[in-house]
Length: 74
Image (cartoon, rainbow, N blue to C red; front, side, top):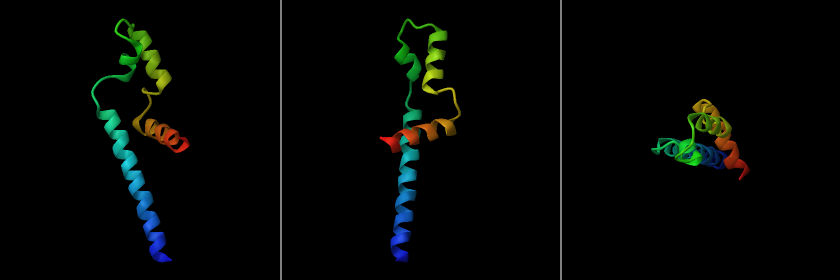
């Protein structure tokens, strides 16, 4: 029974670690998502409004929590 619990805990830790790696990889990629989505002729105000809408102006911890919640919901 103890071995099963230990394996489940290791599985959860591995999933958490992988989620951190995927989130970090998405954030490290070059380019600004808001600028790309807004288009070439977008004004700085439009880009900033899009960042606000997407939550890119929040802290990394808040972004990760929101992203993880979306992953868990599917």
